[in-house]
Image 1 (cartoon, rainbow, N blue to C red):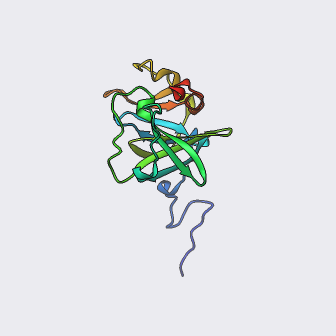
Image 2 (cartoon, rainbow, N blue to C red; image 1 turned 90 degrees about the vertical axis):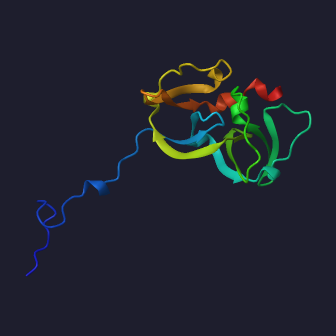
Image 3 (cartoon, one colour; image 1 turned 120 degrees about the vertical axis):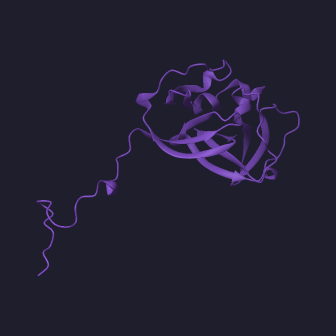
Length: 176
């Protein structure tokens, strides 16, 4: 006779396996990504309309536009501006557009959408904004667009900086 495991007392062959336990996520969902200078940033998922990887020839250059702008993109019948996020934040490294695909993060607030071209998408992560620290060692050109940073590795000064998409969308830099 085969005995069935007793789930109430915990006896039997099927022991509780902690590796199967799903952790409840802490914090809010964020998208992690890199700019050409290899700095890592995050944006809150709720402000992101979508993330697309597209061929550079789908971005139409605009003559006499700000150097921050790569051009425009037709996103399902809607024309949106696409900017080099690193350049927007004041980084000297320019995004390499001579590759098969460029990751673009479309951020939206109310009726405004802007595409932010980045070097690489890192993935989605649950991050607790309660653990945000004030940003340190940040250039003045970047400071107005940061909500804070998470320290990832104290030894090698690794940090993940949280961008403020509202500040980016409302910036006067778009007029430049």
